[in-house]
Length: 161
Length: 161
DNA sequence: AAATTCAGTTGTACTATACAACCGGAACAG
DNA sequence: CTGTTCCGGTTGTATAGTACAACTGAATTT
Image (cartoon, rainbow over all chains, first blue to last red; front, side, top):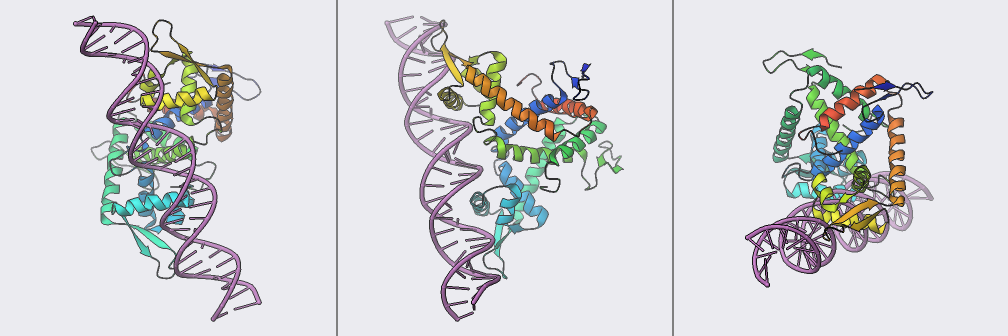
């Protein structure tokens, strides 16, 4: 794919057919992906938006946490999380347990239904990814996964999950 | 990163430290990226949301097109595009020219200001990407760019830009 | 000339979000 | 203790982005 090298003081830069540097291609493709993801985030699953899915996943990982933790972790306003949580509770996917030690805090837990829906959505997403990546050689998958992980580990190498 | 091979009829599968397959890692990292992108899409630039930026970019590429084309290309409702276009026109970033042959159609064009803002946003994004990817070896950038391009070229190898 | 098609706008509704004001329990200072 | 401050969470309000449906006006077809 790279067609030319330009030794110009900023370092060797490969350019593709359209005269783009690799960084520019990454920028363009990430933008395309972001826009598509945004467009489909709401209708990801009849039950679960991308955000709800993420919140549920976090609860599963951590085995329950506070709404404030979710807000901090995902850089969402606490009011936003409050309403999302209220919706998830209304849908009986999570439940709140008052912390007996501190009656201000409500520890959020997945319900059985929540766990079931989460697993179901995860599986349906996994199937979609598998299909999409079906004809990639395993070696490329491993490399791509590593690149993505590296890309996301910035600027906070510890945040998120 | 890959730690084990599992020859089990579904093909050899490498698993990382957390017991994830490469596909699962890709799924997880793409989800993280999508969520972060969604969170920052609105405040990408004081002037331009991700969608506006994309629309302006499309106009620049094509040298003008109809609102309906934008809607079709980006799978947005025509009413949505109509309002976005109205906002961009209000901000004097684009202008409408009535097609003299068909008075139903308005061909949209970037204004000088539109071109300027678009270039400015593109450049500021490019700088951010460059910084983020500053310590990647060029070879990895080229490979990552190719993987992303391949990933996005699905399921419509011709759509988008 | 009437009916149909097409580009675009407008009315309405919904979702996700943020910010600010608030409420009630907890911790702390005196 | 008691009052103040802090903290977790909710609610009021506002905004952006989106879709769907109804409409307008122009072009095309019958």
